Image (cartoon, rainbow, N blue to C red; front, side, top):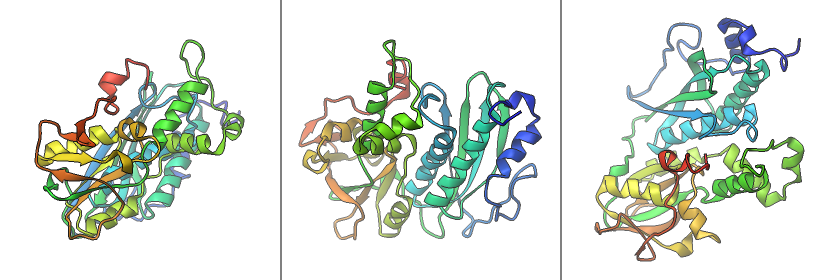
Length: 330
């Protein structure tokens, strides 16, 4: 029986776990996978911690995402949150809840995606533990840990009037990719149609790149850590759209963020409302050496937390799973 035919329900937890660990780089932690818990070395004694859950349906569709894609994205979105604090990612803890009928080949492809994301985005970061269980709905939960290496964390609450507002990374590409998937890879009833390798290859280069940015985001982690070292006053991961995330930063700092639509590329609306690019929203004082491209200015708090060209933004406003999942945009 091949891996593609064997399901996780036919194996023990130990057999499934061994198939995962065999595909991951060897741990360099003082105590890695295999005991009840891992032991990590953190240079300055402080650990940055974050967690994120991906659920089949609202967060991903198996018709569109390969197991490798899911492993890569599950790692990337958590690594971005660590870097948004100015920290260097050092470890991931990964929990998988899977239906019995899940093929073993899925688990191994998922592990390959985790390993590839760590190697490409955060060399030295590794999967140091996790959990396996059974569920009717495929669910992925990842906890990421990071080291500040002696620096103070960069929080959302540090923006000050007069700071410049910068974006590190892309805006709107992942949203464009999601639009391509919904427009071309759903049936008349809205159900997803398989995105086969052949269908992906048939996309024009711009659409193929956008789909890739949606399914396997590549947050510029090194630049975020450099921004922290360069004196960023506030920073956060751009996961839910520029307007919504800028609103969160503005509320935390009790300021208004005034954005300039002319800085947002060919499709400002998509840049403002789209999510899942996993770049970084950063503020720098006027005398700092900023990283990224300037998109606005921090001003005194007004009625609106965020303005675009001096006015309230009337677009969608970003991704909210409690609002948008029922609308079929998950």
